[in-house]
Amino acid sequence: MRILQIKENVVSIASEIQNAYIDFSNMTVSIVAVVTDVIKEGKPVVGYGFHSNGRYAQSGLLRDRFLPRLIEAKPEQLLDEQRDNLDPFKIWNILMTNEKPGGHGERSVAVGVLDMAVWDAVAKIEEKPLYRLLAERFNQEQPEEEVFVYAAGGYYYPGKGTDALVREMRGYLEDGYNVVKMKIGAATLSEDMKRIEAVLKELANYFAAGDSPGGHLAVDANGRFDLNTALAYARELQPLNLFWYEEAGDPLDYHLQSELAAAYDNPFATGENLFSHQDVANLLRYGGLRPEQDYLQMDPALAYGLVEYLRMLEILEQFNWSPGRCIPHGGHQFALHLAAGLGLGGNESYPGVFQPFGGFADATPVHDGMIRLTDYPGVGFEAKADLINLFHKHFQ
Ligand code: MG
Image (cartoon, rainbow, N blue to C red):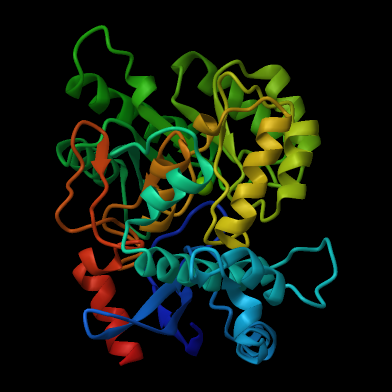
């Protein structure tokens, strides 16, 4: 068994939306196809990969370093002999040959793209959905057949007023979500509070009396705030009892996060911009987060892939955090499989944005805040027509 070819390309996911830090007018994504010599149903098994929104395409790193290392490796260096399959851990080590530790930068994104494609191929070769393979190999528990998802939106864009924001959030509820998320931090505190209060009013109308609307709303500052601003928002948000307050300050400013935790009793979420298990250890060690209530959002498709994500889960165990506190960033099918197979607490969802990479199988609508996995082998890109069509268009 061997990898015959690896194809790579770049696609645009440009849009008008903005968060507190960036706009997405030039956003791109790297896509790859790992073609194996294994034949199923008359065709070679091909694993596909991409990375999450928010980081740009990684063509340079892929072409200059990571693809040549994989192509030049001897086939036996990549094999899981016991299972007669590719070995994602050996492949990861080949990819990271001659890479110094630390300073993880964006090479973690490039490696993540390839790691996703390798796991897709591995599960297809075993003819099972990835989440079942993960549960068998890495989890003592049965996989979950459905996973909690929340609707992430509420972006700023030119001309969008509070009415449009409220309509957007209402649409997510009507589509089956129970928790919605909106951006904060690109307006003043008083403007943001008006936006938040308008959404809370709509949530109060939608859910039964006595059901706290704050429990259905998360807010995300995308790392925008300094400590004083983060604290000022915290004071206003505290009485609203929100689902979570996300990425208040710089993702690597653990001091800010711990100072903020001392002043805010309700849940935080952070971690989508931590790309290594070492960074996660530092967050848990120094960030003041509370394992009984806070959430971790590391995204395997930005952070060296599933191989590294498993190391992150080992760090969680050392610090007495449950995998159930993890709700990955990214809104993609790959993380959905991790959630179901490894017992994570849920997954992000981006209804309507970052298409076709955002979203899940066409035949699995969200119901009561949950989404079902499918039986397609691998990650199941084939169950999402716009995404598999994109892969076919670029790679056939
Ligand atoms: Mg975020």
